[in-house]
Image (cartoon, rainbow, N blue to C red):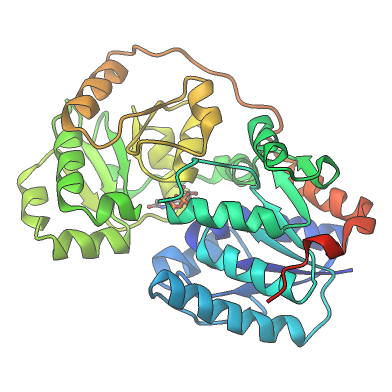
Length: 369
Ligand code: UDP
């Protein structure tokens, strides 16, 4: 059996790390493709090095661009890769454009797709990631779901139970396997209690008022806010002309994106996480750090159901109020969800090995012109 695994963006690298190690361990032959969607050293190479992911066999160098350009370019290049060898399954992770492009290229060549992190839904089709999630799940042959709720979402969309597997959260496997290696970032020198802020979703960064409203809400807090700024957000802060506003607020300490091990340390020791990231909501939950999500919805429903996360949107007052509650300790501890452990990649690969009869694209599901 030969597997093709595809990564493109920062959260993908975190998710694929345990998977490639497990494939090596199980003697499964695989190629790793990096589409080049994220190419900055801080968002890409550093993750390969720290998480000891082998160098990709194939680098597509797609780079940034509009959704259409990025997805289209990736599909064209993926098609060439897929036609140059013989793969039994293409494994994709998460919800980025590379995930969608690789899945469509594969299924059109009648190569089965396995989607890791299947079934997450925000039910908001204005969110590009939601479009990717829905479409990738629709064309996937094997669906690896992180939670019971995501299994239900898939079944509600008519996806066969036989192809849907509750395997747990692979990002949590990476976290648990690296928790003893966390590195204290320099930015914490001389800092006592603090909160963490991450922001990169288009709905927040592209709108000047929302961005300002979030920064004001965060900046009002009684403790400093450490803000590792995503390159895309940095560019938006500059183009919206709000760099100066940020500098005026001494409570917000902004820094370059941190390495994985530094960011985990930062998150684990913070009083509260403020974020619009999907992965950070889950990681905060595992670190037992309360999270406020700067969005009007979340596909990570489980974090809300367990009381680890609250949606606060972008309203300055609401953000300040909820931060106040958390800093006063007004929240209850929560348990860790089932299967969020160190064996997720093993479950996924065992499913593939044990269900090879499912590795075909059924005629009724074929996408035609
Ligand atoms: N992350 C990191 N350094 C940072 C910010 C985030 O290593 O400065 C990690 C974070 O711990 C998580 C991943 O990046 O593992 C999440 O990526 P991102 O927020 O870009 O994507 P999303 O989860 O929203 O798809």
